Length: 166
Image (cartoon, rainbow, N blue to C red):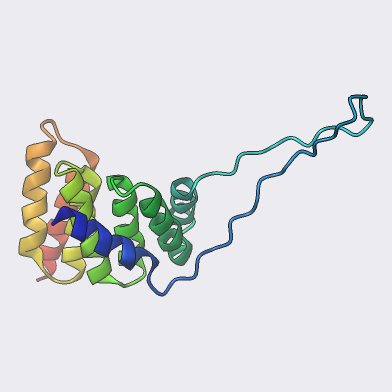
């Protein structure tokens, strides 16, 4: 079942999104000539991986690229709960609540104590008007964060605001 969920989430990550081109790394030239060359060697700069590019896109609030790169990161590492969490976050911020919930659920299947996924799925439920579901994730965070944590405090404040406005 988890394998099917991961496959579905990975498919969601890349569905209807064109892959961003990946620049080729600099390649040094080889020569049979053993004499020294007057041209300096090109240094090879390692490009960040898909996950790192996805995180950078999230930080830049570039949701479409975050979705693309997190989808690629998930394809490369289907057990990366953080990538699913970021994918959910980017989907939620772009208005795709079902895609966000699906990604958060996979993150929580992979790591049931993932604080970020509990907070963000709770936030998604609040944005969808489902305070009761958000409270379930707040309770989970209360259990996980023995002495409190930022994720618990953030979701608790959001739930309080939602209850105050309803």
